[in-house]
Image 1 (tube, rainbow, N blue to C red):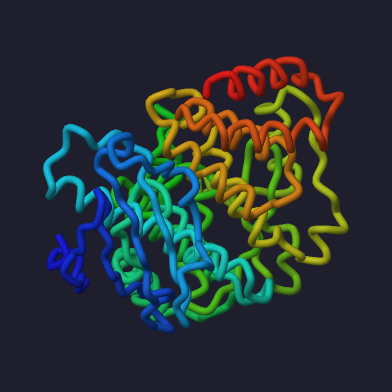
Image 2 (cartoon, helix red, strand yellow):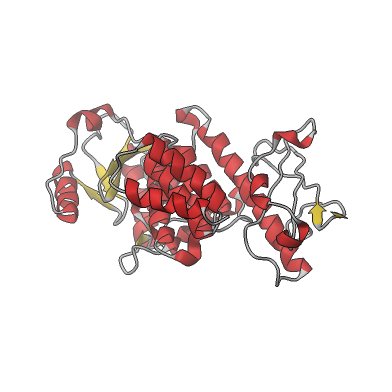
Amino acid sequence: EAMHMQTQLRAPKLHQGSCYLQVPISVRPAQPRCVKARVLFASKQKDAGIDMSRFEGWDPRCGEDEPCAALSISEDTSNLSSRDEATLLARSTMRRQAFQDYLGELARPEAAISPLVAAVHVARATKFPELQLSEVEAQLAPLVHRVQHALRETDRKPATMLDAVLDVVYREKEFCGNEENKCAETNSYINTVLNTRTGSPIALAIVVREVAARVGLKLSGLSLPGAFLLQPDVPGMEQVLVDAFSGDKVTVAEAEKRVSDLMGAKVKIDPAKLKARKGAEARVWMQRLLNNLKQVYLNCPAEAEHALHVVRLMRATQPSSLPDMRDEGLCLYNLNRHDEAALCLEAYLKAAPNADDADMIRTMVKACRGAK
């Protein structure tokens, strides 16, 4: 498995039912470095006599000069082969690193945050831990090349560049919104969107934004209820909007009508925002992307582990969100991690004691405390 990941793992040391590995991890492709990770894994947690929940997250007590992690795996591994256990362990480690990479991306200045890079980290931290940024960039390259070819014999005015991007992405390569299954998880992972050429408005917007940027056209995002629009960040093009779901250029009035029809209520776009050409912040892009995934996974008990990964990413994106704090507790409850669930749910009740769901949450906390 280590050879498959092109990662060197030192020989494992077995001690009292635990396995420790030294794992080099790349923090960011542009700034590779190695950190030590002490990974604790007990294939038979009960027999080992270890409460694995206390090893969740980054552990500063490892006694190393470099950052170090003590990581656990919540899945039942009692029936797995040693190779399957190693694979599960490696994927868990990669997810943890992806989460740290995501935090690092959000910590950059707003203008430097890349929705594409952040979206790759989201995929790595949840469903596709082995995914590399270079793989996604390789998928984007043919789109960029086709746009550049189309612009070779024309002027490079912003309006012409926008038309070329939309023609290549939506008409020639046939990217489109997933009308048949708007709730599919594949709609929100950037790698699967590039593979299937279908996706959610926000994921398609990330693709179009990135292709446009690589040919010299900056597009900003306009987040609306049920829709995500793109706007050229160019003086004189404030009234030009792109529906990322269909790839259509629309006027402000047309955009308002589409969103109003979708929501069943009148929606107005703030003219001041259009004039300022101040698009949605990167955190808004990520919150939209992650919220789509949360809705998919929360409605499927079998996906509780992925739901937990997504909700923790959402809490990192918007730390003040009380619903996400509650949802983390619900995910932990569904995974039978009752002590951790109780802590999250109690924190939620402390912050929102009069919430509509407070009585239900109190009942769940009692159940958690009584599950010991």
